[in-house]
Structure formats: C-alpha cells, structure tokens
Length: 176
Image 1: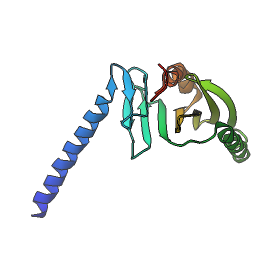
Image 2 (image 1 turned 180 degrees about the vertical axis):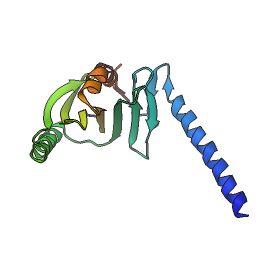
Image 3 (image 1 turned 90 degrees about the horizontal axis):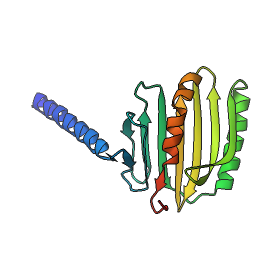
C-alpha cells in the first residue's frame, strides 16, 4: 500500500509541476508578461527564463538571463506608502550597509522609471554582487524592481536590457 501511495504522490507531483510551468509560460503572451494578480504587465528581455513566486496578494516574478549571469525581479503588492518616507528609509539603509562594508557601494536617490517617480538604490559588494533597486507607488500598490548580477562585467552586459524591461512596466489602470 505504501509503494502505491508514494508512486501516486510522485506522479501527482510531476503533473502539478508541469502544470505550473505551463501556466507560467501562459503568462507571457506576444512578449508581454502579465502577473497572476493583474497588478501590472511588462516586456521581459527576450530569451530570459521565468520563475513565478506569486503568493496571495503579493506578485513576484524573476527573469534569468540565458546564461544565468543576471536576474531581474519584480514584486508588486498592496501598499499605499509614501515615496518620501521610503526614500529616507533606503537612504538610512545605504548608510548602515556602508558601515558594515566600507568597500561596498551603497546609495539611494530619487529618479524616474517607466515614467513613475521612484527611489533608486545601488548595492554592491565587490566580488560578490551588484544590484540596482527601483521602488515606486501607484494607486495603492508598491512596485519593487531589482536588477542583479554577481560581478561588474555581467552587470554591465545586461543592464540595458534590464532597464528597457523596467521602463516598459504598466501598472493596472495606468495610461498606455
């Protein structure tokens, strides 16, 4: 009886996993990704693979470069926060990171991404990781956009593709 049950569970798990992959692939139509919650759409870099981590009201998706050297992450969730307060928080986080790692590069500033006022944050620990974060709010939603690579060379190689994708983001209800 145990062998039958374990076999059934294995088959069920394989079917469930393949259904999840198919559903994830269905979210990219004509080169445009739309999250499961209907919060936003954007154009991911061509040829990048997708992993969807959406749980409940938080939409999370990662796209990985073809060689695995770079990633973009987009998270969106219900949050009617304040960009000014978020900027001050990220500025303080940058200071704290710099105290922990004096060789690193950490900075926060205001910018725009995809036509939205945003907070941009640089995060680099040489030889370990380099990231850029963009945060913005739109109609009761918070959007966190992250681009990362493990080294400067890979970061520069894919940066334009990541920024073009980030600039294509269209929150639900935003003007086209």
